[in-house]
Length: 443
Picture 1: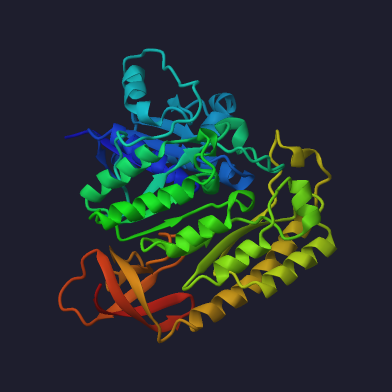
Picture 2: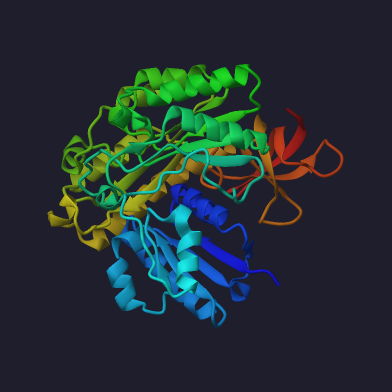
């Protein structure tokens, strides 16, 4: 019987990449979905906001109850980095606690633990993978995330990330391109480029338009025969997003006109309190007028300084500017941030505002789904859907996996099983929030 590993990755897609690095470092372990049969259980935590912290703690406690006797429980990631001491005191049953600089060394640390040796955690900042880092890509045979940088140079008053992930630290363009080439050789064709602030990529290396350079370099490699078919960029910041970047995306045959720019608010008063910079109205206009564009954003509701007037302003902005997707977060008061020292808005008011905002967007979202019926899109089929064995799971080629929605394929003009790949799909029906489609042919 071989050794088995169960890994739970919480939080954003950036955490998923770090989890894949740990899977790569522990390749001698068989990855199991059944926690009760695992010899090692890893919970890769998130510590960004209060809800994420609570989820991480509850997941650790649940893992302690579910794991078999003698199995090693490891808490890794952001929560472990921020609150290692507190975790040791409150949950002493955790066997190992590792931080954000240890993902690629998890195998060495685990061996040290088994031998009863002292575990040496990294104190050199956040781990940033390169083209030589071993990864086990999870969840897809066609799509992979590429992490561009770690840390952040922005000074948002509500955000604790720089306090434990540090300043912006970008990998080189050469390293990024080599990883893409390596993954294409393994059969991956679709990529999402991510970081805390993707539009600042390589600014710490003295390159102002790093993303533009990346897009052009990928396009050039594709012209020379690199079998990459699609890509998109997540997490743009208004102050570092330029018209040149938007134009590079629009001109690219590989990068989709996918624009994910968290705005956090529309009120100038609130944005000033948030210490968010950058004019975004003209950027949004350029994004929306791009052919076949898809625009995603995020807003924080109930930040200190958001009075009724500012909230009404945000509601009016949302109603005027129809986003394709939107994340809404109730303000989370994070210790160590400037916003934590400001006068807080009662949670009851925040919850009421969240419900009001959600009603506005839900109405827009459902109307947008209905408009899809009868349209043809290029979609990526990933495999069978978790909804039912009778459906295949697909997504519009523009969409990022898991966060932007699923097309359930219940009919096909192609005989036999559908392999992972690119297909022409006609949207035939919308049932609730389920989008159904028919495969017309391969692309």
